[in-house]
Structure formats: structure tokens, C-alpha cells
Length: 106
Length: 121
Image (cartoon, rainbow over all chains, first blue to last red; front, side, top):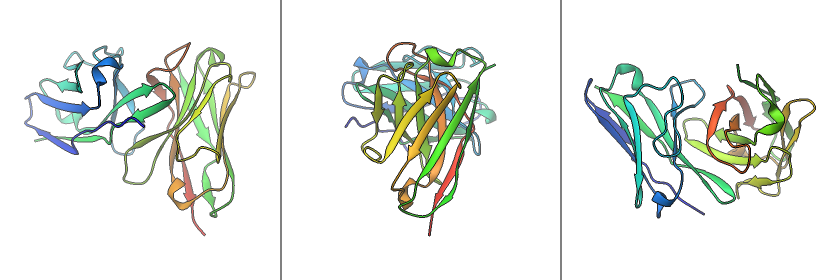
């Protein structure tokens, strides 16, 4: 089975840039998607196909994917960005989620 | 607007069965693939199963294969998850989610609010 590895936690100062990574073998050849989940809420899609933003997601959110690492970048981090972030791919016959990263805005 | 409303969760004893439903509205249900994703208390998201737009293709996580069955009724705009031989580690919030792809599987663009399944004697 395909594995995705994310850091358990990332901290960022208010107004600075946060980068959340998602590692997987040759992940650059796959389409990577990112979901944000705030406490007590359902997940929300914030990035799809590596770098595409759904409507309503701020331009502060961006994505990249190359080699063995995909990255979700959040610029000018705000308190409202505090959440768990999950990377996700479809691997031939199954969905795969990363373990999730807790983003803390200091 | 797109709405996904799960139901059918509850408390069930180990070894028993439960059927979850997900009522869809606000879009043409019969043209989208659908998924079930679960989240155990305090844990991350775990993909459970997926079904193509016409029900012709179904895929399962190894952890549920042979015990869970995903299905859909496009005439009722409803997605189902039949869960048999439930185990304590199946306890979770179960989310249904829409796949953005009309053909194949891709990203999950809308999620329901989830339904809680508790497995306990």
C-alpha cells in the first residue's frame, strides 16, 4: 500500500509563512490534494491537483509537488488558519491520506 | 448548494451490523463518484471505500474489505455503507464525500458532517 508521511505539527508566527510537507514515494507523479479540518468540523478541500485552489480559498494558500515531496504553503498566516491539514492521493485502487499536520499560529 | 447528510450511526455491539446512509442534494448525484472516509476519536482521516458514479466500480481499504459494502441508489440520491462484523476499531465518525471526478477518482470536493459509530458491548 502507498504511504504518505506528514509532520505531526508545524508552528508559525502570525503573519509569517507556514509550509506543510507530505512525503511519498515518487509523489510528484501523483495528483495531491489537501484538506483542512478545524476542531469539531468536517474537512474542507483547500487545494487540489497539487496547486489548484477551490473557489473561496484565499490566494495565501498555494501548493507544489515534485519528487518525493508535496508542499502546502500558507502565506501571511492568520489565527483562522489553525487547523489539521491532511494530504490525500488516489493510488490506482484506493484513497490514501497522510497522518495529518496540526498547524499552530503563534 | 451541495449537501451531504449522513445518518444511521449509533451504538452497536462487536460482531453486529449497521448500515449508514448519505443523502445527497444540490447536484446531479448520478454523475459523481462517492467515498466514505472515517475518523476515529482523536485520530486522522482514514479512507474507507469508494464507488463510481454508476456503481460499477467499488474499492475498499484493506481494513474493511470483506466486511463492509459500499453501494448507491441513484434514483434516491443516496449512498450507503453496509458494515458487518463490526469491531471496536471500527468506531469512528464516518463521513461521506463527493469525488470531483465524473470518470475515475480524484479529489474530494464536498464532505458531509459525519455520523458517529460506536462499537461497544
